[in-house]
Length: 103
Image (cartoon, rainbow, N blue to C red; front, side, top):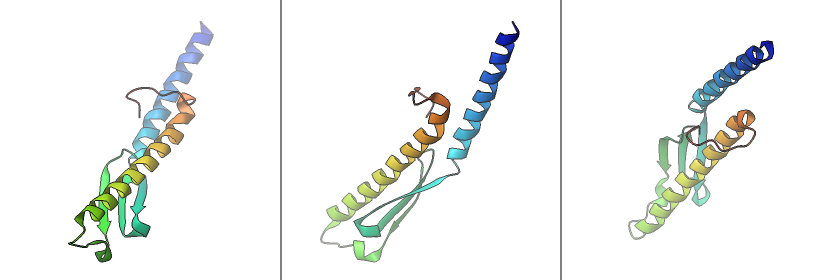
């Protein structure tokens, strides 16, 4: 019975650590870019877009599709990096297992 209580305490501590790590992901900033930095975006660890910067040289009224592609590429770059960060941070607790709804 003593072992069960000890195990439950460890599980509770791990849950608290996981919740704290998830909260901390929201404070982390990840940058993605495209076109050699002419388009940059910043997301947080919860994969929320925080900022989008487009340098004037990226804006060509004759080639709007290029700008759209650059924005998509930069956003996807940042989101992929945020996903990797979340997997690294939360993987400490899950041992690499993907737990739906956790992150």
